Image (tube, rainbow, N blue to C red):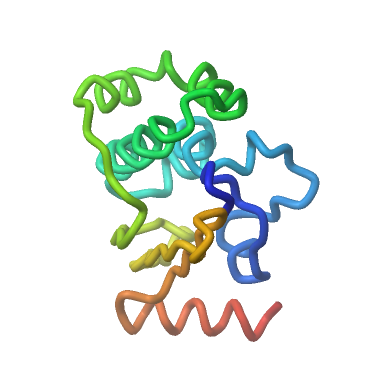
Length: 149
């Protein structure tokens, strides 16, 4: 992701789980925009409200350090009317992207327990987010996905 939390690269397993982002606009590839506007994430993330609150705190942290960004303002204006975003925004919480654990309903018979670790590059221009399996069934599902791609 770039420093504005827009996904710039992904692997085939990511595309198999979240959908291929090829050809999507920067706005639609933005992690914060996706958590509030992507119907799949709103229904697939088990504790969506908690994840949305965390992503809002991350967004606030990044936006506060780049308040003149036209792109971040655009993200803000497209999600600001979402009641969950408003609730989280009003808490004034900030958070650095680091580790997050969540459950994702992948298919009718399969949940993925994911542990996402986010690292920032030394220049501060990019983040690397890695989602690893948090349990054995998730590892098996992700391994099968990787083999079928």
